[in-house]
Length: 222
Length: 311
Image 1 (cartoon, rainbow over the protein chains, first blue to last red):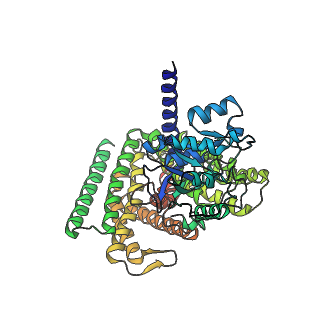
Image 2: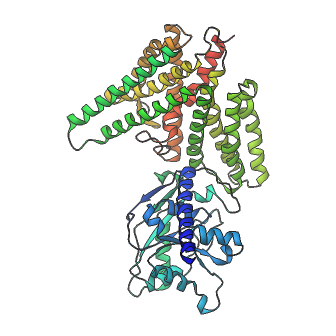
Image 3: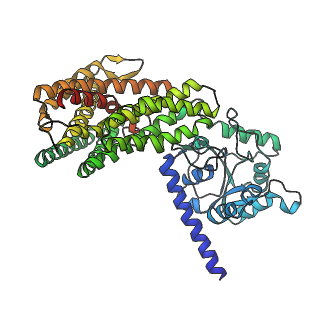
């Protein structure tokens, strides 16, 4: 019985992953731009800017099928666990890693949940801003500490910055019908934590590395 | 009509075979590695095979095929255009309406041959209602710029492009049932003129027409391309209700409009700092890189035919 369940859930995840990626490509014509990193089978944490529910689907649509199957997104349990439908979408369809942003007990520490998934061999998609960026003038919010804690605990995992372009225009917060606009995801060179690097210094450097992938004006897009 | 259609597609196939052979020959003569211009030429010719095949399929399905094909072209072009413009969250509903309501409705008007509404739906009703919806959203930041760009987008890539399938609705005495050939005439002369301008420009191009806008558009390319496209148009008069001379004059008008369309598209791209509109068509760029000339030529061609040849 359990075997059947896990088989079905794997199939559900596989099917929705393929279907959603195809849909994302049809609507946005998304193209990955690899600058200083290439798609590879190494274990990675892809960290990206976040302004839309479509971000994770867009980013994973840029990964090769194999890589996509072993990459899971980190999502907020206090949002995605709120209703049965949300939980079904997040956990069963997208196979996301749900973490609690409002943890109190050390046992709920989200870093542990993420490390657990990394230790199973998965790559992660992480949005270090911790929430969707709703400002229209500030391109990237301050990073939370999660990225630093993961980098300290698993220094061999590559940290790849990914700038997601235009998705917030395709599917802004509070909307569920996407406007078809062309999107790109720019994958930058991996960064690594330096010896004895301070938490704030590292987070600032990661922030700058992600921001550097952003086109300065629309003209730098191509 | 069957005879002309067969001749037409045999002719197109022949030209493409010849182009592919020339491209292969050039690549063989240049040896390894093949230069970027030749690689691009080869990609362009391959994309032409696909485009001619798609138009051929649309031909088989007649009016419906053409309407659907050009609605899809409008969709792809609109996506490229809107991507380049500045949009804000308050534009979401207008943008959605452009894709999900304006395109389908405009092409439905074409399909049902509702000429009266077809001509004013976008220039009057969308023109007035789109900014109204945007204003109701309450975000006035860069309002005029956003609204103007949306107007441009639907006028260029929906309204103007929809004039191509609308040719099928014209009532031309003595030309019944052969309208598809008129569409073919327009596409071949305008796109042929683009190709010929490219060829003449690459071979003889010296002086730029508007160096600040597009250095690749030269007087030599323009004159050589348009002149030879007029000859091409005269040769294709058997597809149309025109005499050979009339066909040459009409071809001249649409090729000139096509050139201006390319020039305006270049100016917009330069202003936005991009080289191509997109990446949809290998070697050519985006849909709009290929269709910009047709955008400007289609309404003028439609009006010429409607004024002089319909009852």
